[in-house]
Image 1 (cartoon, rainbow, N blue to C red):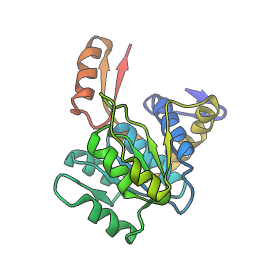
Image 2 (cartoon, one colour):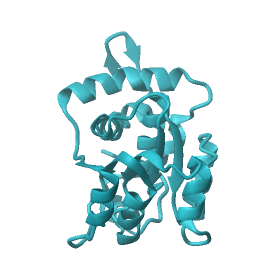
Image 3 (cartoon, rainbow, N blue to C red):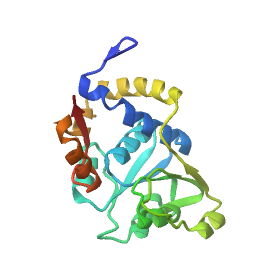
Length: 214
């Protein structure tokens, strides 16, 4: 794939679309240099959101209950993790932020527990970005949003401008020897295995993106 003067390896080129999603999420959340960002959900999109946030100069932590996904995030240099399944998530969030809360919390898990934690972990007058699609109508702690004066933002897909700017971001990340984007791709499967690949993603059995080869 060619964009401008930069040539992408085909596997990295396939990541342009999910990275555009991550770029748009960060834009919607107003993530800026020096922000403390919490990403709830360490799946493929959550990890990409974290990579984009870090590229914007933010300090990024993850909240995730899957040990394999926590390990994968650590392999990209994300040392700060919260595992609500084995520890007091709020206490850990307070530890990481000195009790102030995160500037931006990005909820990608679409779980009810993640939605509750999002408003709890956010600082006063911080921003919560909702990205994950819950299977049913979720419950958000509106009282916390009111008392903390939180900004609640939704994010879906991306704009053409986001996609264009993502190309430059991918170029920069590809040039960074410390970021192995190829690790974001867990499998490359033939189109005949599309249904099985979708099932694996829904069941959380894949920690990365599955590419379908035609």
